[in-house]
Length: 248
Image (cartoon, rainbow, N blue to C red; front, side, top):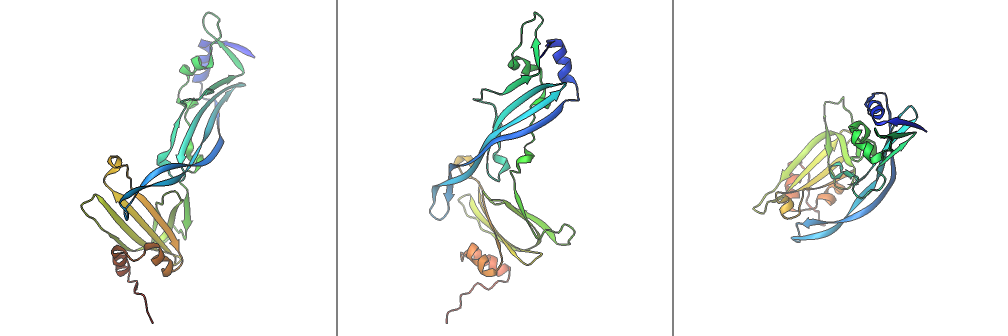
């Protein structure tokens, strides 16, 4: 193993021909507890959110010298906005192989001392490889004259499809909470239902907007998803869907 001075180390890490590789390791799935506001009961209920955590290592290599940086990450499955990363509580953040670096007095420097000389090229992680925001494509045709939509769904892959909006309705009151319903028809003749529960309370009441959605093959499935609330009936009326139940 060769020995280099701190001056030579500074020159070495400034070079642009380092080879960069990253590897996600120990990815595990669990659930975390959270609260969700139930509009029917008026209470906050405990819900389980699928959660992912793990570690990622970025290795930079040049002339048989390897500098590795490791950080942890965690996120709610299918929700990129919840991604959190860092090194807090970790023992092995940095490693150096292939060289010993000494200071001006000839004393060996610890890898954590050397970290101060490393810029973001050695630490920046590309998380797109995790495919956190997963999307399921349904009858997608970008060349079609019909629109292409992507709807968000909590804790499940989002849905992307080419089609048309059949109807959309919303209600509002003085509580700062309201519901939005939308019904789409894909280019292939399927139905996509979308329900958004909006809130303006945010962190004050530990609330957030929630998103539900479903791909339906039939109108019977559509009615099963939306139900028969007054708002749902308004949606059916706008979409010219008969929602009456025939009694013989």
